[in-house]
Image 1 (cartoon, rainbow, N blue to C red):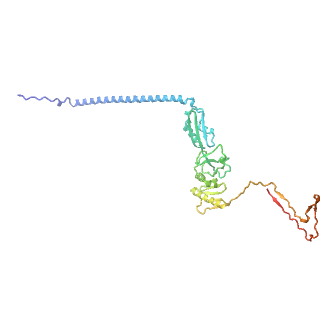
Image 2 (cartoon, rainbow, N blue to C red; image 1 turned 90 degrees about the vertical axis):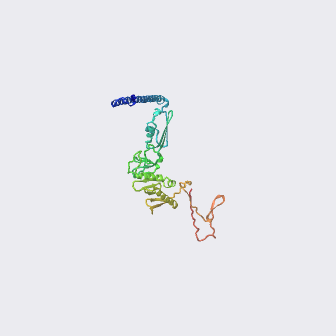
Image 3 (cartoon, one colour; image 1 turned 30 degrees about the vertical axis):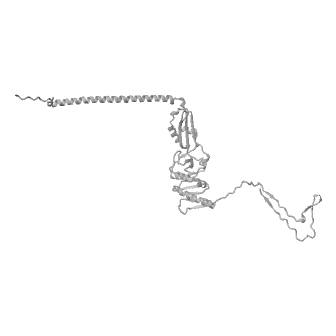
Length: 365
């Protein structure tokens, strides 16, 4: 018998050769890459369409909002600026502030840039703080706090009238220079800082010299209770770079150093207390010296003024009244006639009668 023949297994049989398999693999790769590109293109197109749609929607909203704002607010006559309420605590005039801020009535209240108005008013040398508020529908409120001048400052070494001098400027506690168009009477009593020639003085500028800064610091520290009553500064000479020569209302001249002003002021207080106890006036004092401080005193002038008694223009003077002896005094006789009695022989003596002693009385009302 013939042995049974085995059937060939189809799974082990090669369908194609190496070249055919490679070609088939390349075809599969090309098909997959084309499908992926198409998928990416569809995704990009979808995203781009969404972006364009969103941009168009935003543009439509912006245009609609702008047109609504223009009609409801910017061109609405109810929102025209009708009232500008201005309050200031100094000498700045209303026209001066409004011209500096470029603010006028009649314009739309929403077109007013409050930040710009604030900055323009703040640039004025007299302005310390400013607040600008919009009150609907037609009012803007402006509050201005002006700088308070504490002294005059000049580059000259002597000045008689700071009001009339073009080189004299007002200065506040921060050192900002000012020129007031309307000078108040109390400005005349402010102390004067003299000899500040180390820098150019201009309106709105802040002083930078050490002498001017030290003088301002001295004015601030000397505003304490005791020194303010007893030592009122009138002039501060800063022309020398190592000292401050201070003159007060009583013409006392005190020399200060640039450093440690508080210690020097405490020493000045001690000398002023001594002057009050000894009834003297301080003439000169040099606080630059740490020990054996040079000091001179002057006697205090005491003036007694009594305005309750007014002296007469011509004081009345009583005439002298002679004192006569009793024998020669006149007597009234009958009929009211005066008769002089003769002296008797018994009382007659060789001595002459005593002379009359005149007395003078003076009375002054």
